[in-house]
Image (cartoon, rainbow, N blue to C red):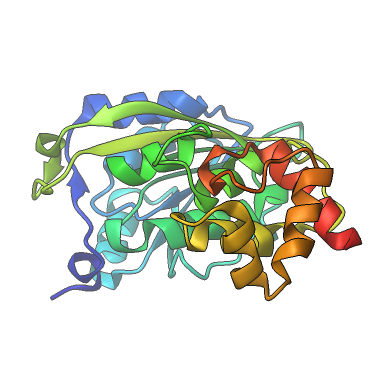
Length: 263
């Protein structure tokens, strides 16, 4: 079994969809594009014809060698996209952008996405194919079951939308589930101001760790705080402590974190 198959990757074979994905970020000759998981090169070929520079991260050495022979202008790196240093990317001279594009393996798609968001200061825009359920979760608004900690973290730093839905027949071999393409535009500043981003992440994760519990109970257990302290902080922040985590907006989470830090 190849590394590619072990990661649950399916090769995109529909050129119309490949061009539609590239059109989302509309690369120009001034832009640098990092492609994640190029596979057999359906997206790579479309990117190479439009971007000024393309770096392709491929974990499967045989596929990487094939891409080097097929597309000599593309910088194909033998690399694991989960751990590659995206923060090292530098914007091209002359006002060019740094773009991330990829058909992410289902099994590690969330890990790669988190790495990209962590390196957001080096990236302007992204078009990423994921399992449809995961993509919809990332773009979900507050108030529904799909909304969770990953939704909050992605939307804190990016404008996020599901731009394309992709059927199984667009891949070889066809997956058992539908896919979707997320379009993310990195914000210049977080959507809400944060005094402590690490504390914000800790509180949000604790709130969603036990979704069936009320916000106060989930946070008291997850953060090791007295229940009354959490209730008081939530009330002061204007948040009913009896609500569930999935009902809180990013702004409400930020207000709650601020009050908890003062407790």
